[in-house]
Structures are given as C-alpha cells and as structure tokens.
Amino acid sequence: MLGMDTSNIYRAEILVRGHVQGVGFRHFVLRSVERLNAQGHTLRGYTRNLADGSVITVAEGNRVALEALYSYLRQGPTSAHIVAHQISWHAPTGEFATFDIRR
Image (cartoon, rainbow, N blue to C red):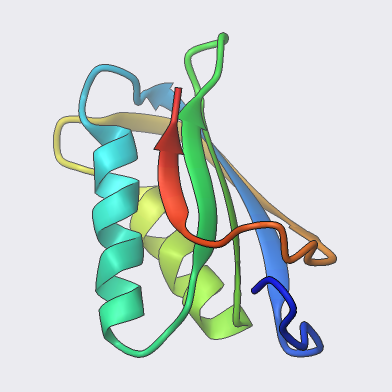
C-alpha cells in the first residue's frame, strides 16, 4: 500500500474475545489472509495478542476482502471459543508492506 492510491482501500480493526490465545488463532488469521490474497485480494497489516487475552487484527485492503476476513475470524479455528467480536472501520494509513504476526 505504500505509495498506492488508497481511495478504494479501507482499514479494519477486528477484535476477538474468548479463548483465543494459545490455540493458534493468530496463525489462523495469517492463513485466512493468505487465502484471501491468493484469490486476488491484497490485505496487509498484522494480528497480535493483547494483554487482556483477546486478539486484535488490523488490516487494510478492499472492503469485500476485509468483510470476508471478519467472517473467518468470527468463526475462528475449531480450538478457539469465541464469546465476542467486533469490527471498526478507519481511514487507511498505507503503513503496511505485508501481513504478519506480532508479539
């Protein structure tokens, strides 16, 4: 996104709560992004654990791909137990070159 036109790009912050740490949730997020990118989308950003036990994902891309990602994350991997989730929309910053897992 660096140096790209961001007029059709959105930023989503997706927060998932429940038993989502220690169950491979961040790797599930990464695989979901890779699946969407393989379909021709370009999602960039990161996912990371938060101190309160939740997982935050910040991603930039087209709205269709971000909504698909949110759909995947609402379900999560079978080892997770999700009790709450939310998405918030923001203006893109174009700060991400890739999508990665942060600690």
